[in-house]
Image (tube, rainbow over all chains, first blue to last red; front, side):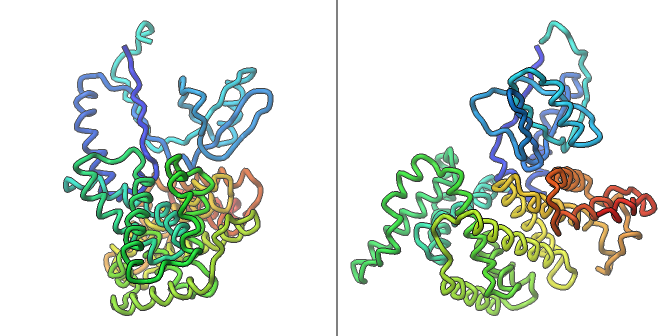
Length: 127
Length: 319
């Protein structure tokens, strides 16, 4: 089975770490994920930019583009796409196309770090 | 990292909101700071044993408030009770914290705290010093080092700034839209001053200056998280990120400034540049340009160019 581990934390606290503190934390995590990658059991690793860099596109009867992250708790996170766009405008247009005629919200968040890895074969049956 | 290192970022990130809320209760900067200090001491004793509370900021506000109230009660046995104005907000405080601080309160508390530091009566140096002391929680010693003055002189400056602020009588009621916009602009300017003090090569050691830049960026992100739709605040955060990204390439071994076209661009911080560019792109979509956005956009065009000759001067002309 493929699993996604979604990391949640208090952003203000994370951004209050000094660079040394942050580096130490990332190093600590690598001690777990590096052996995993070596065994071919690690897929994409992503670090998102802060929520202040986010733009939210709300589809439905009216389309609304808002600055900032998606903040409601009623909806649940159901999936994600990683796309390569030339501009934020292009990403917004793409989100609107993908979610056309659906009642769905896309939070568009630039990636700070992206390592596709993908040392394991994607298995249709796994998901 | 020591065993207690995990507490530091918690206390650091809670500080603006906690001191801001305590200031709303006590309406006195020194008292708010002392209450927060005391709450931090208790956190350092309590959290390693019991684990961090679910909401560290609310915990610090509640404990800080209770400690200060106890202290007031104890003192009141020998001194007259504090006036009504000082106590007016205290009754509803508990319920208020119990249901956690709602967003607008939080926003106005932090904005007020920042705004108090940039009162127009204060000269720039005092604004920066006050913000670093009160909002960021830097020690007087650290701030003195950044300005190359003695600790005693800096202590005196901060004390003077505080009494000027107390006399200025900043409104504690929730600000209206116009007032909020004015405060926002003043605070943005103050954050830019903090950054420039760190960025300018004039004073302090490299280490101290970097801390000021980092702090200014943290404050700009904090402000943007509170006002996510303000293009000028996006511009401010972008500008600071883009400028600071170049800092590692800006000085030679002797501390002299290296001009932009001669800098080793491989030393630029690509993470910060990417975030700055993302923010400026968001800001420009609003088509409400302002000085921070324009400066950030220019810095962005420079940051984008891998070599000096790649600089898109026509884009800069359009700005």
